[in-house]
Amino acid sequence: MLNIEINELLQVLNKVRLEDSEKEVILKENESFREKGIDSLTLASFYFAVEEKYKVSIPDNKLSRINSLQDLKKFLEGHIN
Image (cartoon, rainbow, N blue to C red; front, top):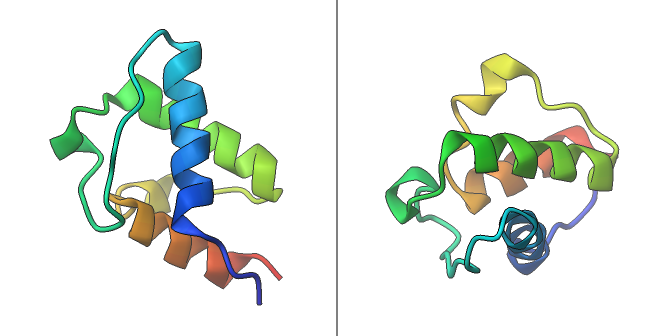
């Protein structure tokens, strides 16, 4: 089973934000993306970047359950060999 670090996911998120001329975000693993002001367009770009990095597809019906870095980590660890 793959062990994914929260910091790796945060780096991907901040790379996406910087590409969109947004500031880096400091986000604890259980903090909500939306509560930290991360909009849906940035989240879509982030999920796409994560899918590319980890060679996985995140189904649309799972996205509504991924609200934090911890949620995403759990999903990825359960779907990557």
